[in-house]
Length: 74
Image (cartoon, rainbow, N blue to C red; front, top):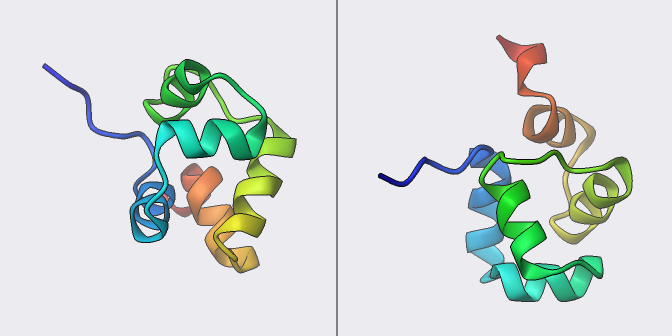
């Protein structure tokens, strides 16, 4: 059984822009399997990746916090 994506806010923006693991891998300079692991919650995004994704999807400060630090809103 597949697990749901770990980050729904980020996933919604990825889908809206039409990105894939491959396009994100190219944008971030990572392997697509690395991106898949991060999207699935098997590994964490690093600060540089979070900032790059925040710029790509034009997150506000609140969206950034909610996307990458959801535990702050529990």
